[in-house]
Image (tube, rainbow, N blue to C red; front, side, top):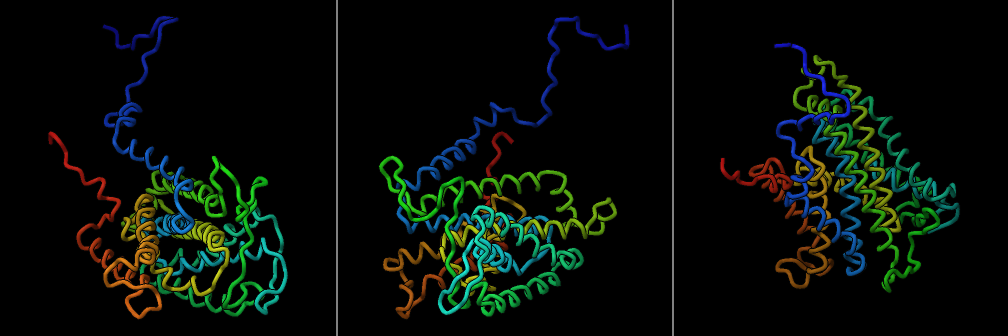
Length: 378
C-alpha cells in the first residue's frame, strides 16, 4: 500500500475542505431566531421616521449618539481595563470642533465668534480627527497609568474642559453656547427644509435619523472587527493580566495609548452627531454627569461588548426622555419645576439602581440576557 496521497485525475472535481468543527454554516446561521430578530429590528428602524413624531426621533438620535460614544468607551474600559472619567471632554471637542470649523465668524449673544467656514462634511471629519488628536496628546499618560490613577487623571480633563468652554467665548459662545451649522453631504442638507418621501414630510430629525443609523452601524462593525481580531485579544490580555501580556510580547503602553486615541475619536463622532441633533452646543451639558452616565451605560449594557454598549446607551439615554414624556401619568414623577421628583432625577435613581443590580446579579450586563438560554438535550 502506497504512502503517497492519491492525486485526482485531470478534469475531476476536487472535494472542498470540510468546515471547521463547531463552525455554523450559512444556512444554519440564517435559520437562527437571532438572525430574524436582527432583520426585523433593522427594518423597523428604517421605517420609524415615517411614523414617529419629532420628540421620539430626537430621543432615538440621542440614543444613537450615546451608543457611538459608549462603544468607544467600552473598548477602552471594558476591553482594555482602562478607567476613563473624561469621556465628556472628547465629546465636547468633537461638538465644538465641528462648530468652529464649519461655522462662520460673526457676533452672537454679545460674543464675537470665530469660524473657519469649511465645508460641513469636511468639518465633521476634521472634528473627529481633532478629538483623536486631543486623545493623542493625553495618550502618553494613558499608556503609563491604569485603574483609579488614570480615572483621576482623566477627571482633570473635565475641569479643564469646563473652564475653557465657559471662558473661551470667541470659540464656544460662553455660557449660552453657539449655533450648529447644518451638515451638507453630497448636495443634501440635513436641516428643517422639508423633503417629501412617500407623501411624508422629512425634516431635520428624519434626515438625521438615517445618518445616525449609518454612523452607528459603521462604528459598531469596526469596533466588532477590532475586538474579535488580534488587537482585541491583545486588549483583553492587557485587561486580564498586564504583566503576562507584556511577557507574551504585547506592547502594553502602545496598545493603551492607541485604544485611548480610538476611544477619543468615537467620542468626537458622538459629539458631532449630538451637536447636529441639538442644533446648539451648551457648555454645561459636557460635564462630569455626562461622563458618569457613559460609565453607567457600559456597566449596565455589558463591559467589553459592542451590543452591550448599544443596549446600555439606549437604556440610560432614553429613560429620562420616557419619564419626561409620561411624567403626568407616572406616580412619584412630576414635570420639571413643579416641586416633585423631576424626570431627570428619577432616571438617575433608576439607572443607579440598575448599575447595582447588574453588578450583583448580572455581571455580564443586559447583553448577556439573550445568551442565557437553557441547553436542550444537554
